[in-house]
Length: 116
DNA sequence: ACTTTGACTATAA
DNA sequence: GTTATAGCCAAAG
Image (tube, rainbow, N blue to C red; front, side, top):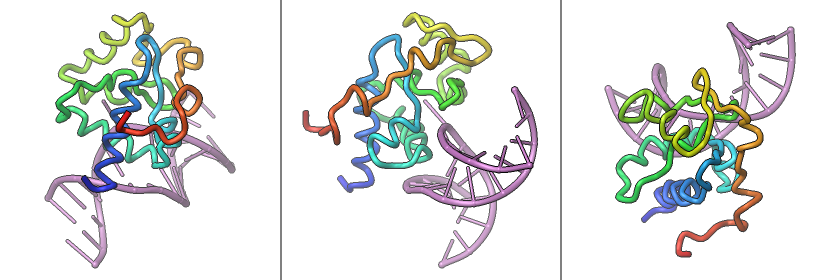
């Protein structure tokens, strides 16, 4: 495993730590892991190939917009998954986004180890 | 090797 | 709120 590849795994590890019914952003993950939001988004694109499922529906952009909905099996699956967890979505946007926002840098220890 | 694209974000007008 | 620009990093052509 290269360090670059490990970054993807760290992204998945963080996303899986997002509590049910909460959401986070690409930028928050990027800041926590020390990468860029683009790279996090790219990692999410490859999350489908992971053996373990990644709750990618809990990751939205900084505006609470479901920008990644088109990458799911169906363009409405992301919204359905969120609503199934108690998150209200309207017009492809999460309501109370700021209240439901879950910052890994605030709830996770610094430099979260993948071995744990 | 260079250009374009992309599940992003911050700032400015 | 919208549009444009700059920064960012990885993958594909």
